[in-house]
Image 1 (cartoon, helix red, strand yellow):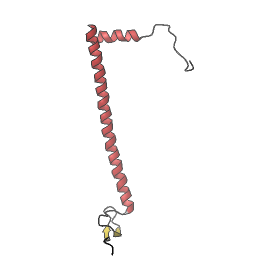
Image 2 (cartoon, one colour):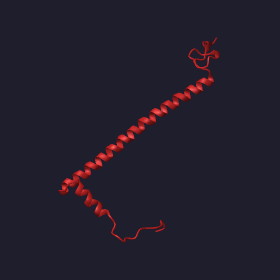
Image 3 (cartoon, rainbow, N blue to C red):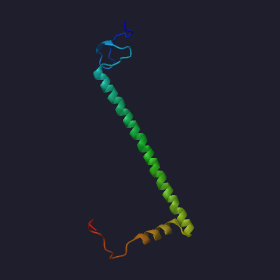
Image 4 (cartoon, one colour):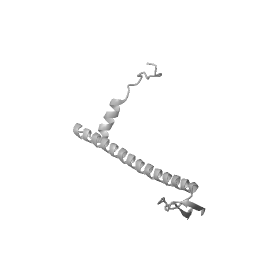
Length: 106
């Protein structure tokens, strides 16, 4: 003899009568799928928000670290940050009339 008991339940979403189901059944199969999809979408949305917040925090931290490195380099050179950045930009600038590549063929 089986110990498995079957119950008659009513779906909490649509009100359909569920015959011969287990004691923990709350939803009919159709509503169960909809409910599982809704829970999954909500979880994914929350997870995406958390990951985006983490990425933004890491990006802000990286830019802060880069800024601090630039400030330290300026102090070591004995210049203000603005003068240091101006000299750095002028050093990276290409001279007038320098050829620019027009194709990737090399």
